[in-house]
Image (tube, helix red, strand yellow):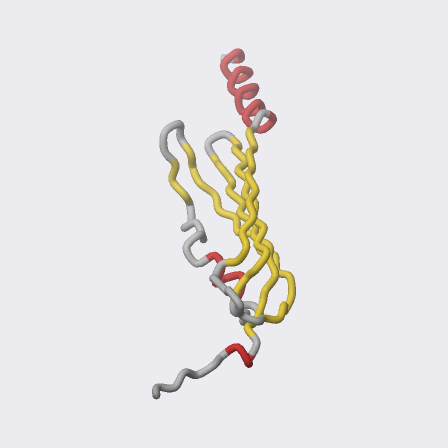
Length: 124
């Protein structure tokens, strides 16, 4: 019995000491096409999204919904910008036994289109 408790304790300790982490990075020009459109830069924004999942060897079950769907809208809603330019993003994944932590960070310049850019077309 003593050997079983010792072996279980070593196994649980090794899960905390031996974990895995991975990451990736990327770059994008903008989240909306803005050819020949004048804009002004409002500020640089950075936002990190974190979610956890219970991962098994073949499949995983997230505890919460990953916030990937409306990612850009959440970043732009703070200062009501029109688009993001010079987007840098990175994500990482840390595994602690069966629990996995996902982090996705996005950073970019929040821009607002100039008021002179909105032109009205008239029919002739």
